[in-house]
Length: 177
Image (cartoon, rainbow, N blue to C red; front, side, top):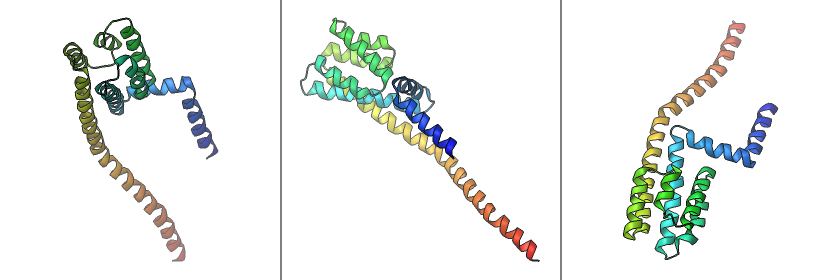
């Protein structure tokens, strides 16, 4: 019991340190199903924040800091910081975003079209809406896949408890007879 407590506290302390946080942020993105959901969530938050602020008329140079902070993941923050730096030197938005490798080609094309037509805010909003729908779909599928496993696990636990209670009772009955 003490060993389990020490392990849990050690993991929590490690995850609260900067190197541990970097490790966690990179590791979570590599998980098979959850990683995709996390990526969609990060990009959805970023694009929705950026779209909302651009729609409100705030210049992109000012909105980018807030949008980067909304990403939440260190890998994405670092990539978006490099996008911001390149934007400030006049590289536009879609080319530096493409160079990070963090966004899907379809998203880059939508952002490029929004940049060229002056409808960047609506392009970002469409990306955010699409990602929100995809996230919802993936979460529902993940839950549907987990339900049978959870039923089996709960059934196994109930069976274990039942056997643990009944076997000693049979042992007592044999001793009585």
